[in-house]
Image (cartoon, rainbow, N blue to C red):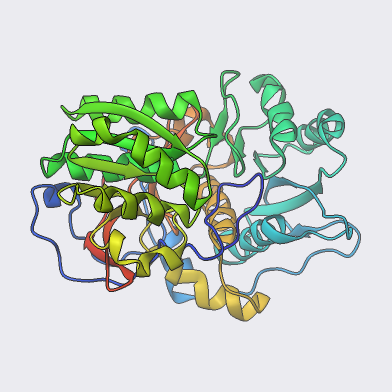
Length: 415
């Protein structure tokens, strides 16, 4: 997977999708119930009037090998008919879609080929000109009766899209850095490191580890710090706060030294960061004589950190690979490169739209249906969009063993 400056993806050597192992016997296991393999399904309540049948996501994604439709030569679009999904992504300096933007586009194209059924198509719109070009691009999409907007762009561009009143644009699925959602019909679609940390803390708390101290890079936002504290307190624990650390080994070790008194009161240490310095934190804590703490990591940890003996046994919540394996082989065959998390999010942004359109019609792409409480099952796991504009995504729990992530509890299959 690839790390991008304004995307919510995993690092190039981050490996949250791990091999399975025996279920760990712990009090939290009931929360992470075992599940059978499933395809890409749309979960809808009786009130929404939806169902997953042979026309739903499962049969298309599991059993067929439908090639993504070719793009046009002048402006890219995938699929020839049906409701439009307007994909707003920037071209790179080369004049081509690069990195995450390319992966998202190709994931969306594969989604249309497999799930569109002639009822959904994707139009790709370049937003490399920045926020100034947003009003015209969104106005044009609305004039074409686009059903939904999907954006992956620098934060100022996506914020400009989100700022347009909800009655003047289609609903927005944001695949990049989270933006304000107060205008309505804006959904931050991807899961980030904090989501992983929250699920890891909940699992630790269920096992009785509730005295938490967190270590985080200096750029952790106050909102994210507050969310971590709320998670611990809601689980009946005590939160000792966040110790900020610099990204080099010396600064990380010094942060541990200065937090000696806080560590003495903790039985659980959460370590955030997309840097190898996370192992320096763990090493310094153990070197200080505190070997009885439970470590909770995140899906952002670089995979190469797993081989460090200091982090053996660390709990990490992450999206299970089962869903992505449904499309990974076909994606690689069509595009000659491995599936990334960006591509999987692109695929799922089409899947959620196609599922609603194919079962209820394009007029059903409303906030109420997008925020159905039962949620959706996609290649990125079970998720649901909330009225506040966030995504609630079920993750599986892993432990670092033998230099790799080993499954300890599969994600719940229902909200």
